[in-house]
Image (cartoon, rainbow, N blue to C red; front, top):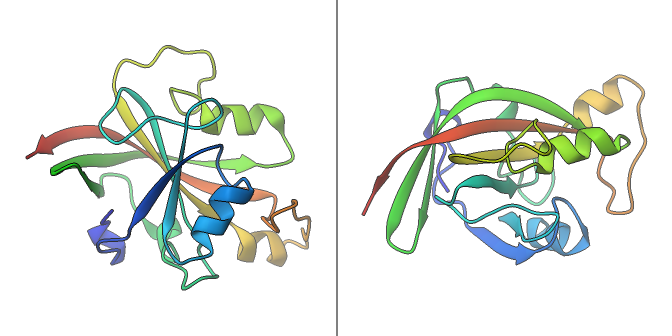
Length: 163
């Protein structure tokens, strides 16, 4: 995965069966790469109709998504898989709270932010922690994987594919 606007280039994304920021996904992220959960509780693959979810660390394990909060609307996210490059364009930013099941359901929905909606296009959610922001606000809550309460989600839509 490459995100030119924030200097991310050729970041490996490892798919695994699971849900965002679960223990297996966190172990993948701890290696300094990104994780992509799929299946029940996760998302779809790159270019597939639905929500392709990519998670990565912001401040630990080399912080590959350290600059994700500054990614502007309209920026491109490029994912290459199976010899095809998928270009997504960021259309929205949302915050997920790990202490709210409704918020988690919205992040993981087939249409990001709209649980129960039927997807009609390929979308991406690139997500990372809001640890510095939570800590600055005095919110030191952590889950079993030491994730802070809040995640930053950058949501995009597929705009092109190139072989």
